[in-house]
Structure formats: structure tokens, C-alpha cells
Length: 351
Image (cartoon, rainbow, N blue to C red; front, side):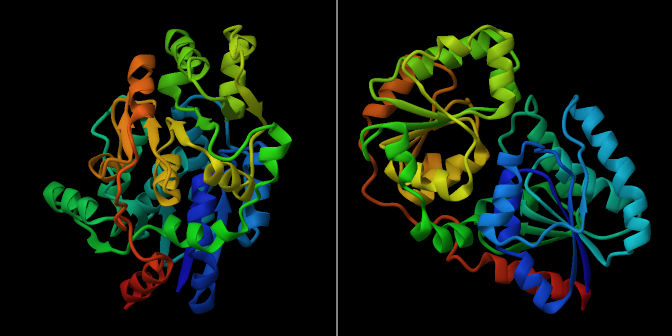
């Protein structure tokens, strides 16, 4: 079995870490890094910490509009598929790299396997929603994190085979959480349980100057210190809007590796984020999550009471912060063996 895997950003590096080593024990994997996250702090450190194999191909295709970025990826992936001749192309999540890998493979007649299939926010304003819907309907094997995702795909009558495997991020979290690096708390001058951890990078929040200003108001209006590892995209937008200095009282940190971020997550009182992946990581860590969006693809976390959607509404965020954490946290995303099941499904696919 010869698998060409396409990754390009932090969550995909984390997910691939649960699969690649297992995959390479039963077949050949060709790992392609599109360079969608081209900042070294968002890329190389994850390969180091997660023991992810070095990519056989590394491109630098980040930047520009979604259309321009996807077009550049298609241009690089098409000849690569022809020369590598994989049996299947494996993609993760919902980024431009995901869509480009799926579309290039489908057009070349190569089966597509999609990890984290079936997730829906039902918000087509988000590029990620369009990416995940199109990828699912181009895929031959749809590997789902939760029963709700399976039900979604069945309702949409996708053509490919739908398999419930659980969430590969659970595998990685259970493996690496004991190694979380708590040294950042001391470096940033915060105490466990007495700060909030925030992330923000979604285009809908940071590319619109009015919403960016509202984001700053939420972050600066919290009653506890806020630690904000600042994504390069967000830093650029804040600088352009003249708002970087308006983050008064917010503790701005550089982009962090998985272990440093996990250390801050495990020490936080709660999380504020617009990231799908961080919503899920907060749930796995048992931390209340305040989501700075009005929709989410991880609806189970909301239904379980651990996640509240507040958009960029400061009073709503303050109210959410006062809510007590639920007494129960069911295993929504599996038992930490999703990576094994992904590989088993790929092997069965080759028959």
C-alpha cells in the first residue's frame, strides 16, 4: 500500500502524528507538507515534538487568498501524484491543503481518504466549511471522529465508505499530555488556575477591522489575565489595524509548540478561542471553552456543556466564564486508538 499524505498546518501535524508511524509499519507513506503554515514555530517544532517523520516533499505555498493558495497547491500536487503513483491520498481536517489534496487526487482518479470527515458548522461563510464539505464528497473513505459525524454523512448520502474511527487528536493528547511543558507559566508570570488561555486566527475574526476591534475588547475585558500565543496572521492584522498596542493587560506570547501549548492549556482556568482544534483540546483537557464564533463544527462539546458560543460579545463571554464546569465529561471522541483504526481502514480499502 502506497499512501500520499498531504498536511500543511498545526492541527494536521498533530493528527498525522497518530497515524504516520503506524502507516509506515504496514506500507509506504509519502508525506507532503504544503507549507500552508510557513512560520517555523508553527511547523518544524511540531515535527520535532511529535516524532512525525520528515516530509518527503516540502513546499512553501502559504500566503495569498484562499483561491490563490489552493491553486498553487493543485499545481504542485498534480505532477507529484503522477510521479509518485499512490494507491490513496490521505488528507486531514478542513484546510486549503485538505481540499487541494482531495481535489488533485480525485481529478487524477486516485481514491481519497479523509480523516475527520463529516464535521459541519453549517456556516458557509467559513472557508473551512466549504473545504470539508467538498472534500467529503470527493472522498472514497470517510473516517469519522464521532457518531454525529457518521449521521451527518449518511444524511448527505455521500458516495464513499463511512467508518467511525474516533478522533486521532485523542491519541496524541493521551500520549503527550503527561509530557506537557509547564515552564511557560513561570516565564509568562502566571499561576495555574488564575489565567485564561486565548487563541485567535480565523479570517472572519481577524481580517475584518471591526470584528478585530471587538476581539480586542473581549480579550482586554476579561477579569483574569489572558495569555495569547499570537498567530503570525493575527499579529499582522493587529499591526495593520494599529491595534497591537491596544492589547492592554493581555500577555502576548510567541507561537508555541505542542508541549508548551499543552502546558498552558492544562494550567488555564478556561479557554477563549476561534479554533476548532483548540475547542476539542480544551474538552480533552477538561477546561471550559468560550468559543469566539457563533457556530462550531464540534457541536458535541456544546451539548455536553463544556463549550459556549459567544461570538465576539463581551457580556456573553463574561457570563460564560461564570458558568460552573459540568460534573461529567463523557468520552465523545473515542478511546485513544483512532490512529490504529485509520490504518486498518486504509488496509481494508486496498483489499
